[in-house]
Amino acid sequence: MQVRVSCTGGMSTAVDFWFDPSCPWAWITSRWMLEVEKVRNVHTIFHAMSLAVLNEGRDLPDDYRAEMEKAWIGARAATGVAEVYGQEPVRSFYTALGSRYHLRKEERSIETVKAALAECGFDESIAKRADKGGFDEAMRASHHEGMDPVGQDVGTPVLHINGMALFGPVISPAPRGEEAGQLFDGFEKMTAYPGFFELKRTRAVGPIVD
Image (cartoon, rainbow, N blue to C red):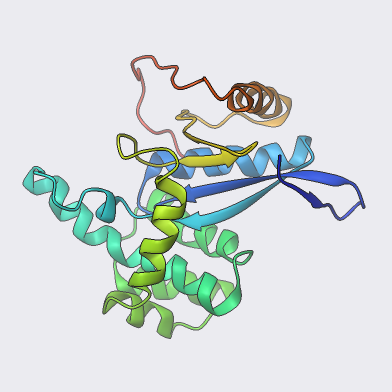
């Protein structure tokens, strides 16, 4: 199990979280993890993956292919933030960009990425570099670091905990308070068993973001 020293001097569990900023399901799970941090001794470390990379070479419907084209800039910009400022500030950039994408329904554009960078006090030129393909090599490396251990038959979110990688959980809406903590307790126990692979039921609701 990965641990880190918390601000109170104790040891906290480190959860590595891979996200594509364009995915509403990853956004919901990320909000759950931030809620978990309030009720459990856990720290989430955010990393970029790319749905566009995941879907390269696949036969996609035209509308989904168009969405993938819009997804590149967010994942590259998140990687750029990590490259310039370190991994920890990625969480604040993801919150700023994800709020624009999923709550305000803003375009997945260079202007939106610039606004998120500015909100965080980060260099806005990261957006221009990302739009022109910058940070691509590092983004692909981050993508494979997160996705290779869990396989190519899943998407985002992906969490690494207890030395194991799992897709999910896919939830809607994100639980709050102790309910969030209890869900994490169950998730942590499942990841601890190396023979666990899958639990699933049909989604009856769409992504409820807040």
